[in-house]
Length: 133
Image (cartoon, rainbow, N blue to C red; front, side):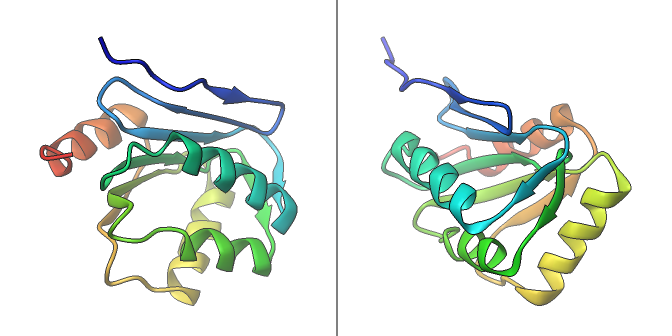
């Protein structure tokens, strides 16, 4: 039987790995992501990593802002060795603007990523992309 690491949850974020080894990160409402919070989130998320390229479902709908250092740090953390696919869930205009800004400032040709407005479509796409995860 698969033993999964613990889930992390506080008033800003929820992070867990599911039975298909997909890592989930969900920001809660009004989160302002700075470098300190980004370090903590990436540290826990990395502790959940299964040790092979997998998928990541990132729900940034709850982000209200992200500073430059946090933005650089979080985008640098996504490598092809760690993540085969990244599904970004955006269900509000503020988060959509944040995602667009990040993709323009830090374009990534080495990362298979796609944006969605709901978790179901995002998860279905991740499962297709990560068949060999």
